[in-house]
Image 1 (cartoon, rainbow, N blue to C red):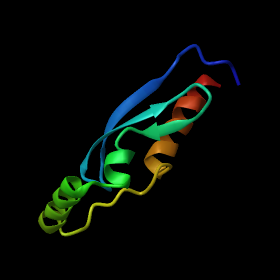
Image 2 (tube, one colour):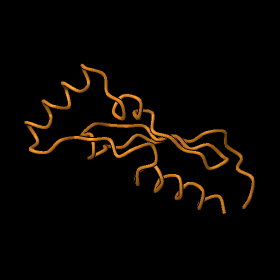
Image 3 (cartoon, rainbow, N blue to C red):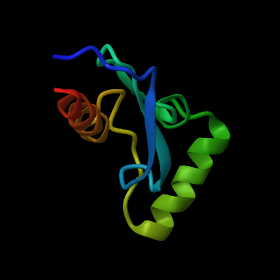
Image 4 (tube, rainbow, N blue to C red):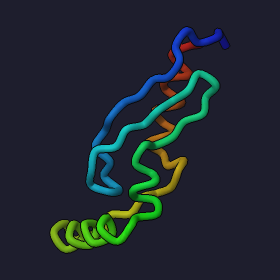
Length: 84
Protein backbone atom coordinates (compact mmCIF):
# COMPACT_ATOMS: atom_id res chain seq x y z
CA UNK A 1 0.00 0.00 0.00
CA UNK A 2 1.35 3.40 -0.96
CA UNK A 3 1.46 6.11 1.67
CA UNK A 4 -1.52 8.41 1.04
CA UNK A 5 -0.71 11.99 0.06
CA UNK A 6 -3.91 13.35 1.60
CA UNK A 7 -4.76 14.26 5.18
CA UNK A 8 -8.49 13.52 5.26
CA UNK A 9 -11.19 12.84 2.73
CA UNK A 10 -14.91 13.18 3.25
CA UNK A 11 -18.16 12.75 1.40
CA UNK A 12 -21.74 13.64 2.15
CA UNK A 13 -24.40 11.09 1.28
CA UNK A 14 -28.09 10.51 1.91
CA UNK A 15 -28.28 7.90 4.64
CA UNK A 16 -31.42 5.81 4.29
CA UNK A 17 -31.05 4.48 7.84
CA UNK A 18 -31.68 7.92 9.39
CA UNK A 19 -33.30 9.61 6.37
CA UNK A 20 -30.84 12.50 6.40
CA UNK A 21 -27.59 13.61 4.84
CA UNK A 22 -24.48 12.48 6.69
CA UNK A 23 -20.78 13.14 6.22
CA UNK A 24 -18.33 10.25 6.22
CA UNK A 25 -14.68 11.05 6.93
CA UNK A 26 -11.70 8.80 6.20
CA UNK A 27 -8.17 9.31 7.50
CA UNK A 28 -5.09 8.06 5.63
CA UNK A 29 -4.51 5.41 8.31
CA UNK A 30 -7.84 3.80 7.34
CA UNK A 31 -9.87 4.99 10.30
CA UNK A 32 -13.28 6.31 9.36
CA UNK A 33 -16.25 7.87 11.08
CA UNK A 34 -19.63 9.38 10.44
CA UNK A 35 -19.94 12.99 11.53
CA UNK A 36 -23.61 12.36 12.37
CA UNK A 37 -23.02 9.36 14.64
CA UNK A 38 -23.15 11.49 17.78
CA UNK A 39 -26.45 12.98 16.64
CA UNK A 40 -28.17 9.77 15.53
CA UNK A 41 -26.29 7.09 17.48
CA UNK A 42 -27.27 8.56 20.86
CA UNK A 43 -29.98 11.07 19.99
CA UNK A 44 -30.95 13.83 22.37
CA UNK A 45 -34.63 14.48 23.09
CA UNK A 46 -35.11 16.87 20.17
CA UNK A 47 -33.44 14.56 17.65
CA UNK A 48 -35.39 11.61 19.03
CA UNK A 49 -38.64 13.54 18.60
CA UNK A 50 -37.65 14.45 15.03
CA UNK A 51 -36.87 10.80 14.31
CA UNK A 52 -40.26 9.77 15.69
CA UNK A 53 -41.96 12.28 13.34
CA UNK A 54 -40.00 10.84 10.43
CA UNK A 55 -41.05 7.34 11.48
CA UNK A 56 -44.72 8.27 11.27
CA UNK A 57 -44.22 9.98 7.91
CA UNK A 58 -42.00 7.28 6.36
CA UNK A 59 -43.64 4.21 7.82
CA UNK A 60 -40.39 2.95 9.34
CA UNK A 61 -38.26 3.99 12.28
CA UNK A 62 -35.03 5.74 11.25
CA UNK A 63 -32.20 4.24 13.26
CA UNK A 64 -28.45 4.73 13.12
CA UNK A 65 -26.71 1.46 12.32
CA UNK A 66 -23.63 2.27 14.38
CA UNK A 67 -20.19 3.79 14.08
CA UNK A 68 -19.04 1.27 11.48
CA UNK A 69 -22.14 0.72 9.35
CA UNK A 70 -21.78 -0.48 5.77
CA UNK A 71 -21.96 3.07 4.38
CA UNK A 72 -18.85 4.02 6.34
CA UNK A 73 -16.92 0.84 5.64
CA UNK A 74 -17.87 0.80 1.94
CA UNK A 75 -16.66 4.39 1.45
CA UNK A 76 -13.48 3.76 3.48
CA UNK A 77 -12.70 0.60 1.51
CA UNK A 78 -13.26 2.37 -1.81
CA UNK A 79 -10.97 5.28 -0.86
CA UNK A 80 -8.22 2.99 0.45
CA UNK A 81 -8.46 0.77 -2.66
CA UNK A 82 -7.94 3.85 -4.86
CA UNK A 83 -4.58 4.38 -3.14
CA UNK A 84 -3.29 0.88 -3.99
